[in-house]
Length: 81
Image 1 (cartoon, helix red, strand yellow):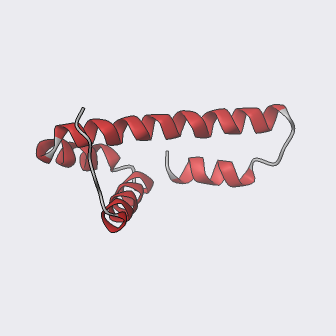
Image 2 (cartoon, rainbow, N blue to C red):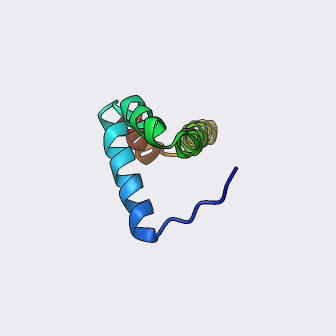
């Protein structure tokens, strides 16, 4: 895997575009268009998305087991899943 150097502005724009698409359940189309242009970057981004989904689910499960308020994590999961 090659190293990528992205400026903060570019990375911020990527996050905004991806999360907007994800909140509209259109992330697969976004990733598909990215894959057409840069397959390696699309794989990295899809991996990050999978990791974040797992982390959010694990955090929610752990909070529920400890009888903690999950309102905020529930809102994030509902918005981006």
